[in-house]
Length: 223
Image (cartoon, rainbow, N blue to C red; front, side, top):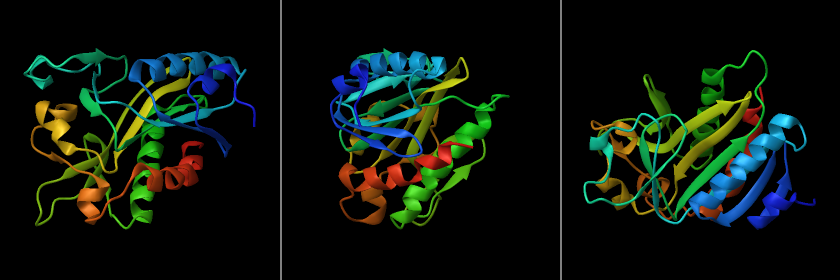
């Protein structure tokens, strides 16, 4: 299909699913944020279909509106301030990031939408052979505590809804360098860990393997 001008600037492959999915490759965070905002206006106005950007970022820390000073890197590493919910997190190579931009039905139920995003990620992990679940009071998708350690987050979620239309989204750790999380308190959580599909499954699980599985489950985002 033909890509709108903004989507085309990200490159990659566009596929038609229950949602339009754009495989954008490696994209600087600020460029992806600019494209999200453009798409948000178009989807909210009804001039473009619901779209999910699927990509990786060069290494970057982003801070949501609830980030505390003590959550940030102690060494002064730059942090991008964003308008999503949640606290600070890291994005980088080996992590698949998804930005769904879609209108929610009236009346808007943000919690129900977050649960659908979680369900997508839980189902993706299950397809790969990794059991995961939700933890009450904590967003994201988790590997439950076991003999290897405490509860561990394998996928993070942070969203914003404006004009009934979603922004930001999810990040699932595939084969990223988990040491990047050591410089921060990821998502403001001090009593749990961060993990990846590769670490849990004991084999390399690259983004390229996870991409089509995520696409397969995107229809869950539509109620």
